[in-house]
Each structure stands twice: as structure tokens, then as C-alpha cells.
Length: 230
Image (tube, rainbow, N blue to C red):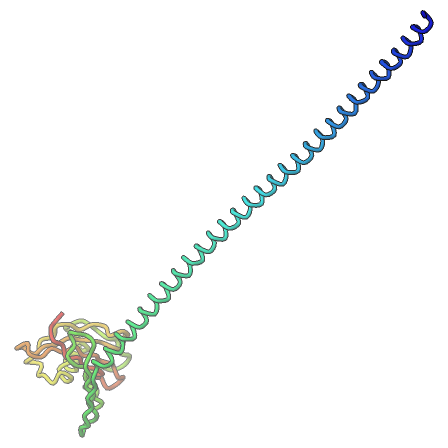
């Protein structure tokens, strides 16, 4: 009897030992499987986060690029509008200047009369104070008492001044006794003068340009009939 119990106990111990080993092995297998699951989940989650981060970064870059493109587009549109506006203003200004020039040309009329002495050309003027501009090809130098190199003088006591007054009266068709000399000055060069005279009753006002002809004296070149003295 004791020998049988001993054998039975030995087999029981072996079974228990084997069962323990199997349990330990199963636990180890479970741990390994759990670790595998954890590692797999971690890898998948990391990939998802990276993909999400990359997607967010890409969307942000696209948004910034779109905003920059939109800003550039708006600037180009503003510049284009400014160019169009400037072009329009320039065109309008040019058109206005052309219209003004055309109006002036239309307002200027010319009258040409042939006389025995020469051709008398009478033109209207764009200057509101100038009633007409007269050029007579028959005008001649009034003669001179001066000799040698001519020096224009604006001294009212000089011979040159006196000859200027005679030339102004000649062009104005007024007698010096019925004429006031309002102004005599330089006409743009040493040998040119310009003067303003009126009849004593003030009904005739002229601005006359003169040119010196060597050995022959002062010659009228243009007569402007004025509306008022300025």
C-alpha cells in the first residue's frame, strides 16, 4: 500500500509541475502577444499622427500660397486700374488740349488785302485784349540821320528815340501831334524794339514791333490793335 501511494504522489507532482510549466508558458505567450499588439498600435498611431501633421502642414502651405497669390493679384489689379486711370487722364488731357488748340485755330481768322504798296494781312488773335494783328508788306524804313554802328537808345532826348516815335506814328497812321507814346522798350534783341501808342482821344490803341535796318532806319514789322491799355 505505501509503495502505491508513493508512485501516485510522484505522478501527481509531475502533473502539477507540468501544469505549472504550461501556465507559465501561456502567460509568456500572452505577454508577447500583448507586447506585439502594443507595438503595432504604437506604430499605426505614430503613422497617423505624422500623416495628420503632414496634411496640416500641406494645407497651411497651400493656404499661405493662395493668400500670397491673392495679394499679388489684388496689387496687380490696383496697378492696372491706376494705369488705366492715368492713361484715361492723359488721353482726356491730350483731347482737351487738342480741342483747345482747334478752338483757337477756328477762332483765328485771316484777311488779306492787296494794295498798290503791298499786301496787308489782318488776323484775329487768341489774346482777348488784341482785336487784330496787322502786317503790311508795304511798310518801309522811315529813314535815319544816324551813321556808323547803330546802338538802340531808350533816352527820350536821343535821335534814336525820336526816330522810333516817328516809326510808331507811321505804322499807327497817326500824326505825332495827335499821339501819346505809352511805352517803348526792347523787342527781344538789340536791333528790335516794341512800343505802345494811343490816339489822344483814346479810340485807337496800338502795340507796334520795329526792326532796325542799317542805313535806312526803323521799320515796322507788326501792328496789334488793342482793346485796352494794360
